[in-house]
Amino acid sequence: MDEEKRPRESDRPDRSQLTGIENFYENFRKVPLKYLDLFIGLCVAALVLVIALGILNR
Image (cartoon, rainbow, N blue to C red; front, side):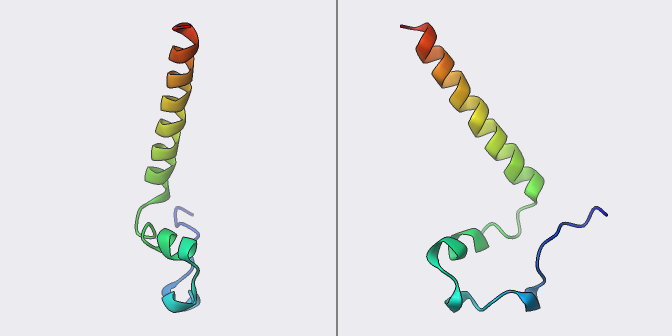
């Protein structure tokens, strides 16, 4: 149940058939999703903090 739902190597199309965005995301294929989620969460928290500080400094 802890397995991540990602396609197997044989299910993926050849890299030459992918678009530019898909090729970009192929670089992150080996990164566990929990680390990507953590990174996105930290970015959102930093954005909220910067906005809050900007509002308070008016």
